[in-house]
Length: 338
Ligand code: SF4
Image 1 (tube, rainbow, N blue to C red):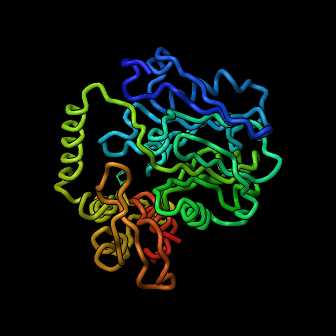
Image 2: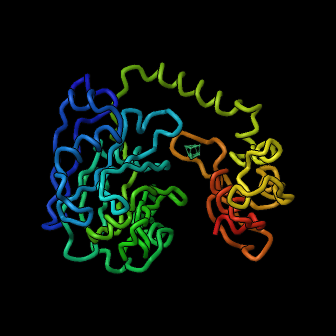
């Protein structure tokens, strides 16, 4: 690595699922500078390696996962990973991102990204630990959902912290809108990437936290900027979003006629108060669920009333609450997380 690689290792992993080979590859500095960020790098490799006639479920399609230059640093949200592939919904290029820890942990193993191709003869998952990667038998994980898979694989790494992204039954069965989910509540959702994993018989990827983070040009300045960004995020909207989550805005949106109700057919909906962050935080059980370097508003939630009492999931953001609540005429906020 040269000093001009600041924020990157200049190294990725290539994984051939057809023959099980895994190789390390150097990425030159000009590529890292020209295609800044996970999606930029992913788009470059997809464009160069997946020709127009390659179908989404072909062995020649790629699953490309890249980190950005801030991954693993002190900036809130820098655990975000970007996946790029040709997806089944359009048979065209697509990218999707998810927060959590994956990007930071991948970087901490000395890698900036992954390029996965081929098709495995049987179900496998990719394990990355202590700077090494290997494909492991995943037949025992078939028909497990993503939370079960995450629990089982995390247990295998004992006390070490692992980030696990996997597909559930939908991805295994090539449902065209199947997602990839990980870090208990984060979803790589666009363009059916879960089906691409399924077509390659790749159940998931588990990466264990390590210590090999790349240097930053001026870490002190980055820490100061990150603190300022976090402070702004806590104080914006009078602190309401940090205190109540993005659902803090439900009441204001309702009163100003902007809440989507019954497929936008009315603006009258007396149930809106049960969908506010204020109601949900007061009536359901919560515990903090921060991502890498971030401790803003995100929480696990346990439903405590209604027919879904006892169900646990990540607290929905405003979009989920509105989409599975007023937009479809559902009056039970607990049902929006099921
Ligand atoms: S904790 Fe919430 S706000 Fe912070 S990075 Fe994760 S999803 Fe985003």
